[in-house]
Image 1 (spheres, rainbow, N blue to C red):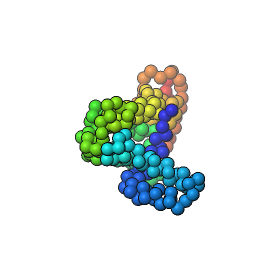
Image 2: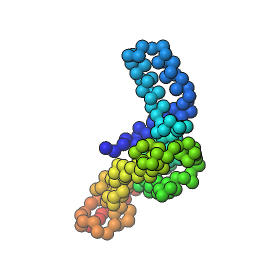
Image 3: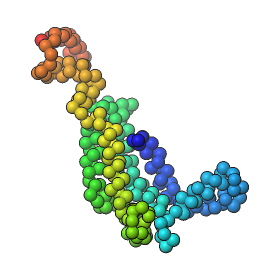
Image 4: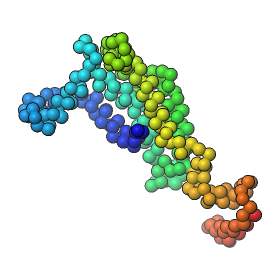
Length: 232
């Protein structure tokens, strides 16, 4: 199942709020458990929250596992996802307000840059990115070694970036495959394959098109006369 990347904007914001207010959320959960009946809905939510915030691979582990996971995810969003999502939502630089930057003519260009950026993170390239410094410190200095990845210790978090980036790239490619084909030029030029072919033929007299006769008329403020073009 592929993720809906549009939802990541809210997930990223929520992750940052949790990290910045970790202690406050912890005490809030404790207070709720002290004043609310154990079988109440809010108490069950508070208990689940505290269980998640308390989860560790080892009693000697200094930093909760979920906190370390959020450090990586938040860093990824800060360096890659958030700025690129904001960039994709901008107005088209040519057409201005209300046009947005994710219209078809710009998507292939955006995807080329996005995949290049993802490529720089692979093979431990992410380690040189400042946003991941806290995550690296937490894993290297605070996580205990447990011998196997499945036990959720240091081994798990050492492998986490490679697995995360690999799955993200795989899902991202699957969701954007339609924008990385030779047919996209038609959509990028005119939004319709037939219109795009005639438009290009009108401008460049493209070779290889069917021998069809058509008449096009063009009228602008700078050229008030009607120009009739006929192609064979």
